[in-house]
Structure formats: C-alpha cells, structure tokens
Length: 120
Image 1: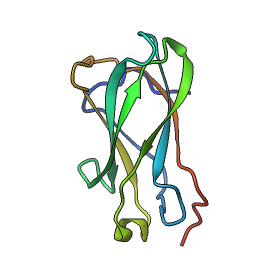
Image 2: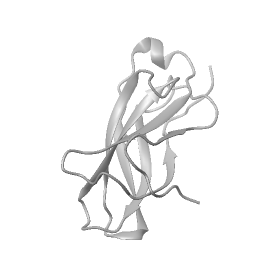
Image 3: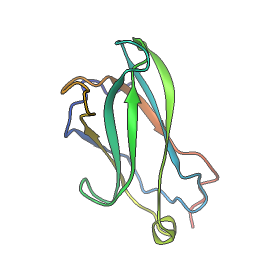
C-alpha cells in the first residue's frame, strides 16, 4: 500500500504515540516519483500532537525517476529535551517546495524511525 496524489496541505496522522527518548532524531520516508531522479518534488513538515502543532522537522521529497522505484530518504528531527521525554502523536503535513509542483508530489510507501524506541 502507498499514499499517492500528495498535494500541498494534505496531511497524514501516524497511528499510535511515539517516544523519541531512545530513538535517533530522524525520520525516513520511502518515496517514489517518475520525474528526473533527484528533482525536488515537495516538502513534509513533521508536527507533534496536532496538524498545526510544533514542527520538529522539515523534509524534502525527491524524485526517483520511476513511480515504482522507491528510495529511503532520511531527514533529521530537532526535538527539545522535554519533547523527547514524552510520547507524541505525529502528523505529516505536505507543502509545496519552492519551484516544485503544486500537485501530485509522488508516492509515499512508509515512514520509519530508528533507534531503540523503548516506551518510557
């Protein structure tokens, strides 16, 4: 399964709550899009607790040259100590990149966090 037809203003809420205290402060997007490989397609803001909650990362989504060829694209997250100490809902809000398309960013297959991630 994947989410396609991503447009500016679209958002996804990840199921469950996430604790960052034992995780690397990064998120990886598994993404594909058919224009020239490496072209900037769109941006993803990573928000805590609400669609308009604090932004802890702004990530680029870049084309892979084929809608069925996915790559893992990792982006750093910047969290305060207080944000790392508590579990949060995660919301991904899609934005237009400067010079990027206004619609149809590409296909998002999954997102992943890395690190131990043990619940407090």
